[in-house]
Length: 599
Image (spheres, rainbow, N blue to C red):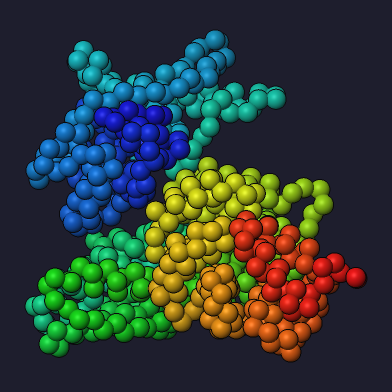
């Protein structure tokens, strides 16, 4: 469905907003809230309805709701003063007041036995693909003409039941006719929903009863909860269910069972002069084991209260939730290593994809097999499709376990498309499409999907580090390096070491060879051919032939037949600028790499 509102077009299938023809990135909850108002534009939508449909019944603070409404207005070019498109009904809710037109497109006619025609108009019956966030009470989008004739609540309910029953019978009859599929796509409400571990953020304690910290403690608890929801594989407990607990005086096992979560985030705050100390902890509820703890100290003044709150929250969440280096992912990876592949869940296979960073054909094959089994068993799990797409691209870029019958990049694109179909607002799905497009050298698509992924989760180190590296390689060095440095700063203790490759290459292209060498040594990936290539051409430029020959000797073990022609080819795979390729080849030539292997 496409809606036009003012200068904006809202496309529910593409999951995007365009204003004056330009894409406007928004958070998933902001988009879902806008669609809820659009579908109920003839009436007031209450706060309770919004909490029910946007937060799945969780009660969140008015501040969180206000933040989403403000972002929605900004995306539409509206504001809280004019309220030309979205009107606030004080104390009650919100109503869309701007003029709306819609384009439902053509739906195929469904003919049941007896030539009964049903459900051809999208403005009468809400088909399953349009019901995910719609209010549950009506089965019609427009009932004004019915209610105007005095139809009773009982008759309306009966009519709804009858229409739905006919629709289901019709669909079943049609679907099971020989040679036929479903007449229209069925979108399940569960698609794209989290299937990973549950986590609850308990109120941060204020042992000294410091009034200055009362606001900060509540804000931190809410900010961490909100940031965790960006990690689409985690199930985050509602604030309403956790507010009764004191984070420093709990029975973790009991609370975990009651809330249905595997992990608990707790914390405390202390204040001295203009400094605040925040301690955050992650406890495994099953055995009350403390699996992570960190202390953050910051200067605290009224002017920087919000900056301190956000800085601590995003760092804590990155350390806890990142799919590449977070505590929860590493815990799941540890559990997965002890299980036979057939017993691994789709989530465990998804997390296991982090083992690919060992850069071995053996680990690549194991992960690919695991993920292919996962999507067969759980075909609606978007994250598994996204990671499978990434694994297919590794087959192309590293040459691991090639299948001669197809291009792994095409398989990657197909898996990424499936992930986006299932969960268009999942940042990992967008990442997967961006990666596949990057290796197909479709840089426009790569840039667009990377932007979408980072808009959906701007604080996930995995996205920042990987996308930043590839942006740098395509020539957007300053932008890419900034993203990588942000990724490392979010979780400086644990991150993929290969991210230093782009940092080193940035120095190398500038002729800063000593600085480049330091970054390439920090990578410390001796069994990865690229690390040896980088060391060889940097030593070559420095005139250090002894170490250059050591690097090339190791390189020939890892990549038999390597020569300058292959060096250029490998760089082109990753869309490096020709100037960088020439510079790298020059360094390799100085290191003693032949023009052509065997000559």
